[in-house]
Image (cartoon, rainbow, N blue to C red; front, side, top):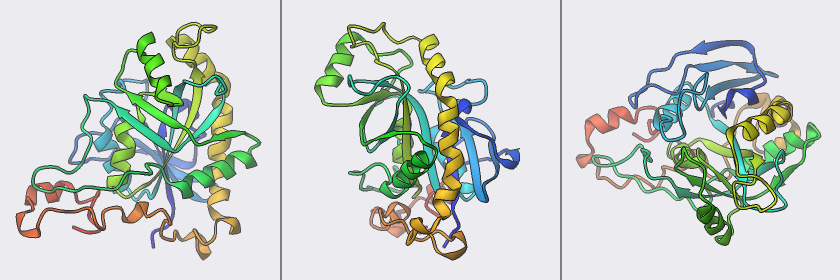
Length: 298
């Protein structure tokens, strides 16, 4: 089995750096990723960091090349993806500065490419549980080791943006029972599942969107201020992950020497029953583009 290679996706202020790091260009059949990928080691764990919006924040949530990003991470050997993101809270008790482990997603985006598959190679994947419970549990354990509380379980609504919500939208989403609102988790999570990557989403609450009568409507300055104030906590969680992934408590998830065992959630075998196009009808050009994403089966 492959060894762990942890991928981190998010804004750069969350990243804690790595040992022997270097920026590595990666070419994909889906276009250029958001940026080069910073690869190296952290606490003995191979690690890669891809700034979702690019260094200097050059991509809006709608223009992020999600397919190229996921393909690039899979192409260089990543097995697990921790997505760190800023979100608005739709609940009174989830206050700015708190961390939340997301376990459910609602996709309200409409201007993004959402699948590696389509005409010439069709696939239908199960997505009832869009995040990996195994990886999420390890992230929680790392946070506890760093002395940081993480709220367990939340539904994240992904909106298109780049504008923030109207008041009517914010109230509507609250009436649906959603907990968080953001702009980047979809189609990122869908594509990670298609690429058979274990995916966990760690969200930092930066604001109350615009529904809360006692708080001003969200603005960029307020979001950045909360991010800056809590960046050290996010870095502490990431710094604690390597030890968490390789401790005896991770067994039977990790064998001797840090070898990665199959994910009990089935994330790394998501395509086993998903491919529906008959082999004789599969488009060779499409298959060539899927060499990294689905090469295990194709």
